[in-house]
Length: 402
Ligand code: FES
Ligand SMILES: [Fe+2]
Image 1 (cartoon, helix red, strand yellow):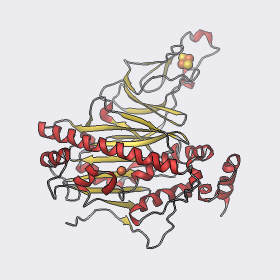
Image 2 (cartoon, rainbow, N blue to C red):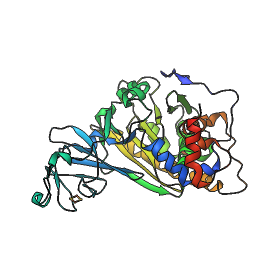
Image 3 (cartoon, helix red, strand yellow):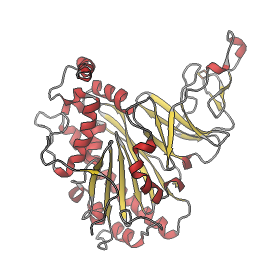
Image 4 (cartoon, rainbow, N blue to C red):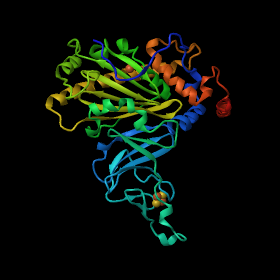
């Protein structure tokens, strides 16, 4: 059955350069430094959902490449984002992944006290400072936007428009999934670290060509229907419909039998798993039972943290809960399979035998991702690695070229 997709997708060209980014860009700390400034800090990052912060004083933290954010619900009920960095000497004002402050934020180093809106209530021993002016020492705000319940932040201005404009092609889908009504599935943040460059994780996730062999569960569920689609602006969409046959594996068979679409899902989302990708490294995955997001946080050129959060509907039937459990089981197997592929792919780049990729049309998603990186960081297009100490300068020269 052909389902009409309500998106303007970018066609795959007939002939294209299929080798991918050169291997050295996956190993260079100088490239990661450029990715930090031109990609990660200047592009929107999802950190959670408003349901992760149900009460006044609830907070989530988010660290990436030396920057530290905290997102907090204030006394007025509004969610705000700040640098998690005390204005006295830079301590973390909250410690951990998630928590709750009662009425104020007390820095654990010397006890400066901030209001939940980030303003400084007072320093300890203010008399020990010369003419102390509280107003000069509020927590520094970070740009933040909520899109259908999901909280995004951006550490520095960048080339992307607002999240609402960027993800406008997906807005109707997120609304159909009632994504703003999702609730956090308990202490559900998952986290793992892999000895790979972050782009190797993305390269595996950005194509469905590997599904038939690498993901027996997904292939059983929706493999006959799965396809990836590129949209303008660095967003992409993948979808696989299920239910055309009963399923061979235990979890898939039971999942298909139990899964029920929430009312009002349009045809292209009905009986399907859908994935919405956002440059540089974020994916939202929706099933009829709930949603998750996952993203990659680089720790170094050769080490990456994979993290995400799971959400469900507030009112769910026993049947929905079981279906969600089975969906998560299938997805957990899939993640483990992908992690192994990621490691192999990244390892190969250290080998003298590695000649680059030879990508299929079904892997055009990698090319689209690499193109965006080359546009932002043109030095990544060079086949041969410049000396590590010259990479930033070479990149600046290439950016200056008309
Ligand atoms: S660093 Fe926060 S009170 Fe000193
Ligand atoms: Fe995969």
